[in-house]
Image 1 (spheres, rainbow, N blue to C red):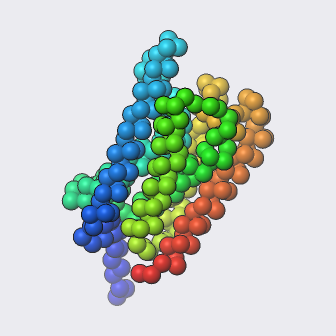
Image 2: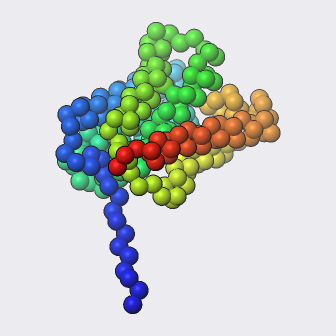
Length: 227
């Protein structure tokens, strides 16, 4: 008879009784993410209405930005971690170390990309500057801090790394598809109408390569941690 292989359930955070500091930091990240997301929605919808469009158009425009989608994932993830006593399937999914790691990596990538590529192309008002710093600096740093302090070493399988790539690849594919229909591209380095398809594909490949390097850093740190 063949031995029966029992598939182990993915662990959830916290792996043991959580400390006050871990729950507090998770709650702080969740609160900042939700407030920043609501503030960004308010700004975007106001600008959309001023152009004679609808609230739905404003929400559609918000969903075209990688930052907003990633901050939403960050808000849900760290809310789930902070609500550690809840056992709903969605909360348990976002408490898995592999999922938390993916969300943190996405958040850190958003921060790096903004500060390297987009920070100097516009001069926001004081309110918008505060909002942008929350989205692109404060949240990435706090998320990375939580990962360093409170996400212990976990078993990483190749399928996890493959699944981590679904989000950025799906975003690029949907963005190009939406851009072909509306002629709107959320970021100048993927604007097909201005740069041409060839240059945009080069830029997208470089960004994706940078994301792979960032993932490799997270994988390497996880592998060198003590159990």
